[in-house]
Image (cartoon, rainbow, N blue to C red; front, side):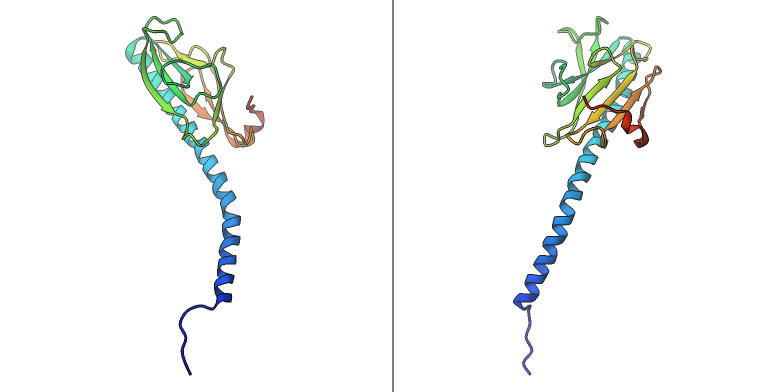
Length: 177
């Protein structure tokens, strides 16, 4: 009896079909995982940035501003700013002016994600830390993507300047508008 090595065409077709089914089931989960990862990463970056801005306000004995930016050189009122910037407000007027100094800039996520920030209960689209390190206002920063508030993350800024994440049970209170 002659021994043959290799696969038959039917065995190969069954293997490719099974691989296709597994890929079809796995790709949507991977997409959700990536989007969730981007939201968590952005949330952590914002928390670290607020701690940095707070410490810089105390260290420099000046107001420090956090605001959205599209170009890393000016504040943007749009919810679509692709980065956040920290500015040393040298004249303490709560405005990023020509004499103020850019301290740090962070990208919210890579260019492929559609992350938007919404500053809730703040009177403007910026956070201002006083010379004592306390924010001028408290509020919530909602971090949303195109899936809406059911998947959003949020950071609450308290009067001491500390941040905390809103847990999943309170997501229904968030708004992504």
